[in-house]
Image (tube, rainbow, N blue to C red; front, side):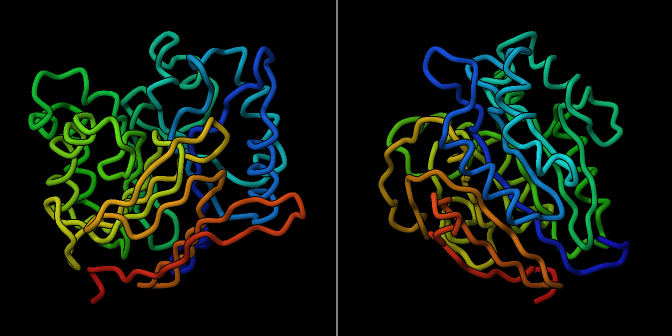
Length: 289
């Protein structure tokens, strides 16, 4: 969008490049999501990690990323973050070298960019599991950068953060892992005025209510898990007081920004070519209330 614009359409997806059993080719489910993405033709795409299963191997980049999304990649920028599977080969080096990133001094592991009236920050949530106490994350190099970067984005109507591991979900397992991520990120993001956090890791769609300090609160953050990009789906169960919508299906999520309003819509591809809307809601920027 032109500088100064207040309109932006972007899509997010994650947990996508899961090869067919015994073959180094994309699954039909991933290809259906990719076809839908091309049809929607967004201004940009955010990928929330686990781009290449099982281990972020270099030989998977072409068949599991560049080929499935080639129609969209030809005209639309992708901004990818590292998932836990992506870093299993040389700590993510194949993807960090293969994908273009906004210029940064952090080895492409975390960065920020602006589009229309939105300030995006991409974090590397894998870092959290490398420190002894997650509550100390804000004092790590990445944590200090994240605080400084968000504080400097004073002109943005929207501050949107994305990374792989989610703070809120409805997956029965990984409870301690979610607590760890929340301890690292939640207060930092809340204090910085972030309205929306987009993650993956759990292979389904989940949208939370606005959450503040672990509770439903109109002054809190909406958390979207969009992990249905192609990997085997997970079962979930709605959590009272947290889950606004849950659906275990292959999908992507479209976000339409119009000034201080942001529409969130999760779309599941169908073979007919027409998507099925599995969730749709609007939120308003807290800054502009």
